[in-house]
Image 1 (tube, rainbow, N blue to C red):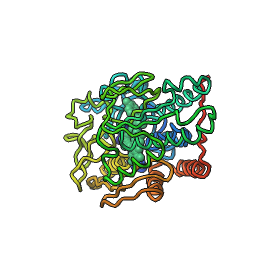
Image 2: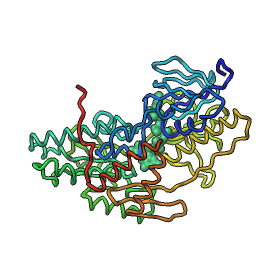
Image 3: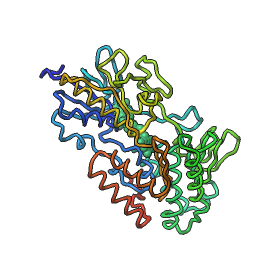
Image 4: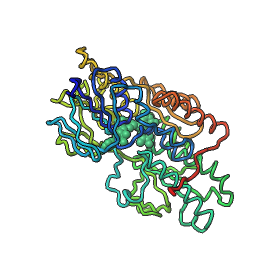
Length: 419
Ligand SMILES: Cc1cc2nc3c(=O)[nH]c(=O)nc-3n(C[C@H](O)[C@H](O)[C@H](O)COP(=O)(O)OP(=O)(O)OC[C@H]3O[C@@H](n4cnc5c(N)ncnc54)[C@H](O)[C@@H]3O)c2cc1C
């Protein structure tokens, strides 16, 4: 309890899940504290659009203080969680003092998993945070500038990109990169033959888009090939250097850029909690999203292994799962504080979807219905606009998307130096 007798709700993480929880606690008779290592909320599904210059940084990251500024019962701190003591109900941080809680919303998300691939932590470009996307964009621009100055670098694979992972992150990134390479970059750098800049998508499994129906997998592969992406399935990466990617088959690809979209694991901080973890470092929760035996601790979003009450399957790590589970935790806490009976969590599936490029996307609905092409891209746009945190963000994204569709131009292709 806080000094004024109100319970304290501590939310760790300001992603979809943490912000969803905070939104539902706006009118609760509680002190709400949200802590994130960044001062912004990251809209991960659009990171690849930032990395390829389609969207600006502020369309993908939104100030957490601004997002929650109208919540009179809420404060935001920028600090990194360093330790959690579930028995003492206290959390420690790097730059602020410990905070105790009556309710904890644990929403620290997932982290990249390189699966022990040699060289990957030092030389791969993961796509999980805003700095990752900006770093990749700057690196690509720097490589094209380098080749513009010294065309002999082309033969060393300076412009080649290998994207690892045939799931939505890898496919969306490969498709967007190919459009950037064959579109704006081809115009920006007339001295470089775009045919000499290769985008290759590597997937260890037998097919791309394992979670989709076979006809959507075929569609995705054809759409990528049409955009000049070379697709290699059944190919796993063995090691990475700054200029090469070696496959387990022994083949070596010359490429100065390897984008890692292949794997995630729950935030490694969970390893210190002495909990029994599920596959991918995720924490199993009960039907009300609390930790077994600790009804004051809610675990939500990518870090949680939530079993769908309808299908009995563990829900995927998706924005809509994170947002809905976070909202459910916030609502349940608000109900408990107000002495109302909370309800178990029920996930509303809006379909699984991914874009491949301009006018090319796939959607698979819960009942098995599928869509491709412009219709699917419109559905993808509608679902993702709904996930954006404010109307201002939605407006910004629509302006950038419509502008890019009409002019085929990506405004964000500049590098901003630190000094
Ligand atoms: C490239 C990419 C594309 C995606 N595309 C889609 C898509 O098209 N559709 C879809 O539905 N889903 C998509 N997803 C998945 C979706 O983005 C995630 O499921 C969702 O972001 C999970 O939300 P979360 O709140 O659980 O975690 P996150 O969004 O990861 O938020 C966790 C928060 O915790 C903070 N944090 C982490 N560690 C600490 C610490 N030690 N101390 C303090 N703060 C910390 C982070 O800064 C972050 O703000 C995509 C994901 C990626 C990476």
